[in-house]
Image 1 (cartoon, one colour):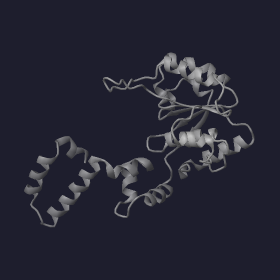
Image 2: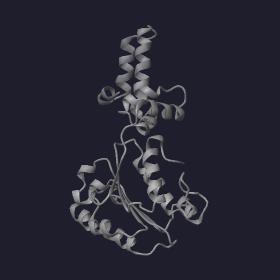
Image 3: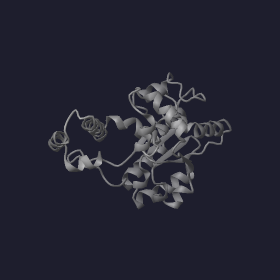
Image 4: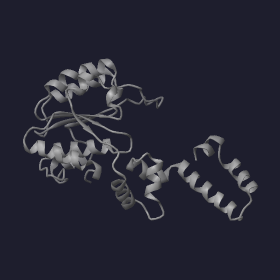
Length: 254
């Protein structure tokens, strides 16, 4: 898998920086939900870890790529909010102890003699102590260390963190690019333009939309309204049917 079309410009800039041996060691990747921030971080991580990288990305066949595909690469870490196994509740913050463990990992030599890569998912949830403990590592990371912070809210990060990272910002792509990509991923029964309008232009959110319960309910509701207009069913019949099937808030959402 390569990066998405709306990510190509950023990808090319990273390629050029690496070719000049001037690639940054810390990045903030930001944008609204549905633009593939995490997916981009995974492509970038695999590419940095790959032993035979090309301009397209990781080679997928070297030892590093095989470990990556098996989700067991020793030189990669994902940091995110912890979920309690007993209660299944997810912490609202990333804690300082988690960051300290990550710093210990980054300070060690890479097992495959290449990059060490860390991705911090929802970096805006770093608590103040965790964020402050990360500053020195962001400032002094080695030449083959990459720290990738993902966030939908970059202004919630400390200014001192933002100033130490290269900013990679993804905006909602133009409608022509979004529609062309989305239609190529969908069966012909779905209208890409409609899905994008319902997803505020975010292509991945639009792609996932047909599988959501509220969208399916919306489609059924619209079909039922059409049947009432065509006098195939009475409005009373449809009303009674929907009262049985959906809660009031689901009807409002649909």
